[in-house]
Length: 106
Image 1: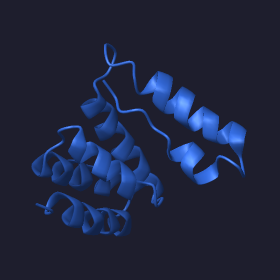
Image 2: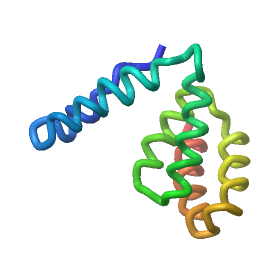
Image 3: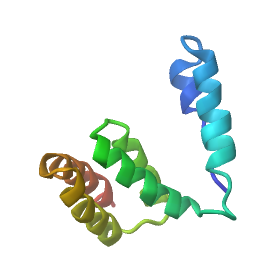
């Protein structure tokens, strides 16, 4: 079962309460919890690939989540290598820098 997310409310709750609620309750509470359709591991792989192609800072949090969802270092390396040809070398380099920090942690 996916861990209850509170990042929306923790970071934006007072400033943008509706967005925070949608983030925590709908995206993570409903979509990510549909484990019979896609496992958290698979959702992490898909999400990381999507975020890498966009070059957005949220990739760091999702790489950490991917590791928690049992995505291996070898799998994330292969994912980044694969998407590099579709999204661009600079985005892959940036993703590798983060992934190396996250997946080389003890």
